[in-house]
Image (cartoon, rainbow, N blue to C red; front, side, top):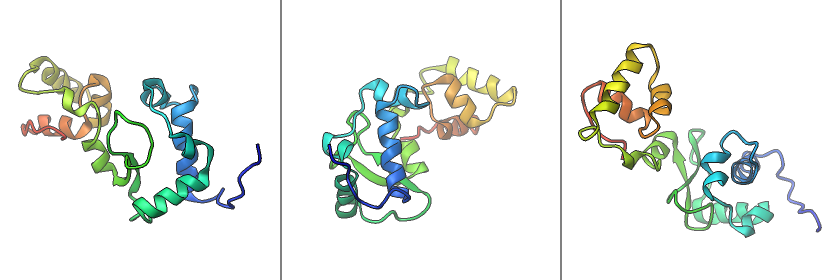
Length: 152
């Protein structure tokens, strides 16, 4: 198979494309279990062609709006494919996590109690959200501040 000539190897978008494929297809990637391990794939056209991926981004998503934006899947149950990606901020992505909808703080007081205990032990919001596994760091902060709002 002839290698694609695009002269984009040192661009941010090329790194995005390369990282996207690593998360989905490399079991040694630290995030594989969140992507490829769950069956998330990159559509065949993009997996085999950076140019096809770049053309879609240029046409459908446009230029990256700023340094705080990265590629996000709109529907996390689907893969990286046309009509399912966008530029999003970290905040947008937190609100789009699959774990967000699984937790109701009013219904599960034991999780709320564990959150309070971990915070008292000095853990930050992100560490707590990783420990309890069903809640985002924004929701941890809200619970600790008595707001009890969800991330979604």
